[in-house]
Length: 252
Image (cartoon, rainbow, N blue to C red):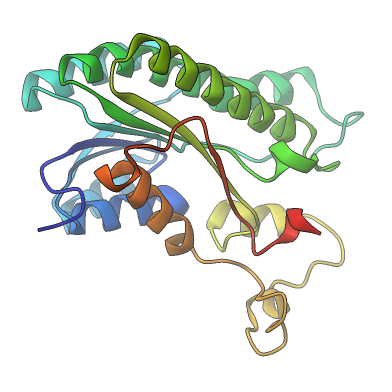
């Protein structure tokens, strides 16, 4: 049997990068996966390949969350796992961050994660528990000057996650909430971000021989297997944790 056999899972931002890797792995491990994204064409294609469902969603809009959860409960009768993965990364330091960049970044990351948790909790409670997995970043732990709004948003997700975990533990509702903090993972979003910075050579980052000590960029599967663990019952005693996947970058 798969490690998440029979579980109903929502994954946001699932049309590419980390979300796509999560969807493919959890589906292969037996979950009924509902993928959401604003990229409908790519999302539909991937969903068709892995036998998942796809729903177009802008996570920053609360009405879409209400409709999504209602649809999942009507079709499946339960919700076991939510992966709040959708995100954007705009290069801009504190002086270059416009009000529009600030508000859009926080809307996608913080509002989206808040809405997801808020609407998933009652649905998970009906089923006797569940697992919420919030995608943060190492930027929440150390701060990144070129990603001012992104760092602030990811830091907010880190604290939000712990608050939700404590809330659920106090109410003994069987729901766990954890955050994952990836470093540089080889995804389209990271590639676009790194390409906008000076002195970053992506070819060298991907050269495992040239970077055998630092190991270069991580792979989406490095994060997906951690998502799988948190989604499974193997992690039944893990909540309120911040789990780092960065090859030791923040340990230095």
